[in-house]
Image (cartoon, rainbow, N blue to C red):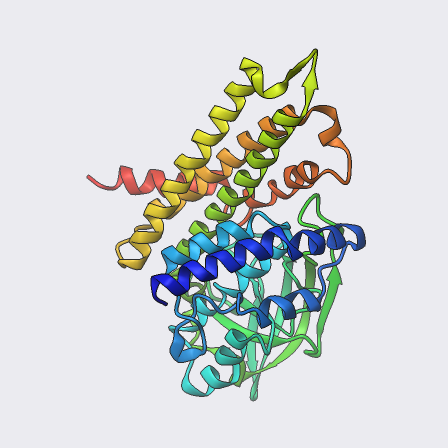
Length: 377
């Protein structure tokens, strides 16, 4: 995509975010649902296949340019930015391991938006990694899956679950595999989880698999490639993307706080004329710009294939902490009225807490960063 086309794309997205998506956001909050029609509208506008290669039906947007787009979407509703984030990243685990037949059956329809798949890694009784407890065993031409997955975004409407498990009696990375599990798989029970604090309508699901029978042809790659597919080449860009969504949401909080400071008058003086409020605004703006530059640098390194995991983790760690600080200050600028339901800043404050957990907590990012620097010598 040349620069002229990209600038037009940005302008279109900005207009969409500040127009129709504001109304859609309100509807999601009112109904508690972010239905398939929202996905369909985003797909029809061409926003769900931005990053995928053109050869697979995507728009081939560079990662660093995509970050500018996801920043804008993050200024809208939390569920909407999750849709854009997931759709523009979930193809990455497929790419290195699918065969030609699976590329046509799964990958291209996924990129086109003809099927909806959701990343299925997190378990209730283990970390999201090599200690996964969900197991599979081969029986004839099928795999039988046993275990649990939970906090699976959009599990309420997904057609397939890109599920990661391990062969029975294996440990670590050995024997881990990736399966495309259809929603109607025998032995799969899907339970909706309670509503979350923020990001209303994300439809988190708890999956219970008891000898769930999945065709062997739905195995992506080979046993032993599961966690490599889940983490290598996927996790780092996803962490940067989540970090940039923190920047976008923080920018919206700042913009609203500035408007409030200019509008609200106490004792004959706008809040914006008070030194304490000016201090809050200055700190918020500086914090946001620092995070934005960290994300942009990581995005450029990703494009150059020069990114190391610590750089993605630094962007994620700093941006999440920044978002916490900015939304705290924004709520202070609004005062008590910002605490009431129906206030956009109240929703932003709740939505902002989800990014703490996506693609690893702050503590997880610190481990990655520390290992990088302590092992350099």
